[in-house]
Image 1 (spheres, rainbow, N blue to C red):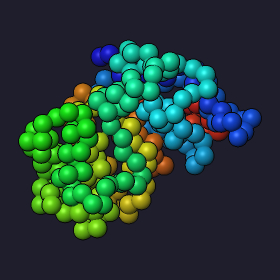
Image 2 (image 1 turned 60 degrees about the vertical axis):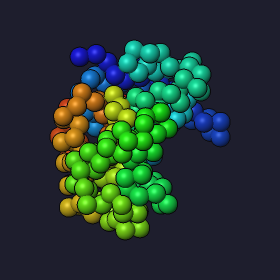
Image 3 (image 1 turned 135 degrees about the vertical axis):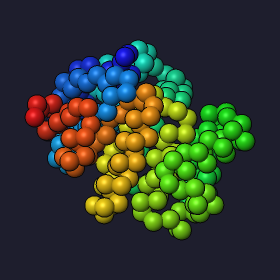
Image 4 (image 1 turned 180 degrees about the vertical axis):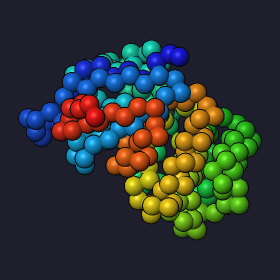
Amino acid sequence: MHNVLTLKNIYKRYRSTEDFVLHDISLTVRESEFVALVGPSGSGKSTLLHIAGLLDNATHGAISICDNDLDMASDHVKTSIRLRKIGFVYQYHHLLHEFTALENVMLPQLIAGKQKKYAMEKAKDLLAICGLEHKFSAYSSELSGGQKQRVAVARALANDPVLLLADEPTGNLDPDTAKSVFEDLLNIMEHTKMAAVIATHNYHFASQMNSVFNISEGSYVKL
C-alpha cells in the first residue's frame, strides 16, 4: 500500500500570536487506512486537518499527497488536488439550501468537468448507499440532521477522493443518529481504497479506526 498523506515536522503559528498552534507534528496515512484524530477542543485537530486538506499553510514543515510534494505548490495546483483527490466532511453539513440533495452531490462533479448525466447517476448511487434514495428531490430544510450529514458524506465522496478528511462529522447529532451516520461512513469507506483522517471527541468511534493519533496542546501524545 502506498502513502496517501504524509505530514512531516508540521509547525503552525498565526500572526496574531507568538505561540505555535502545532508543534512538530508528523503523520503518515496509507491507502485504505482510517486514522482517528483525538484530543480536547483547541488542541489543534482542526488546524491539522486544514493543513492536510490544503486549506491552510503550515508555518514550517512538508506535506505530500500521493507522493506529490505540495508545501510549495501554487494555489492552482492545490485547488485541483482538493477538488479531485480530497473529500471533506465537517461538523456542520454546509449544504447549499437552494439546491436539492441530488444537486448538492452533483455539484462537485460538475465543477470537476463531469457530464451532467454521469454526475446525476453517480449522485443517485451515493445517496442510495447512504439510505437516501427517497430524498433525491428534498431541500435541506426538508431533511433531518442525520439526513443532511449523510448528504454531506455523499457529496464528499462524489469525485472518488483518495483521502477523506472529516472534522467532528457527527458532533451535531444525537447519540443514536451519530452512531448510525458513523457506521454508514465506515461501511462506505471499507468498500474503497480511500484513506481517511477523522477528528472526533468520541473515543468509542475512534477505537473502530485502524489507528488513533492523539493531540494535546498542538503536540502528538501517545495514548
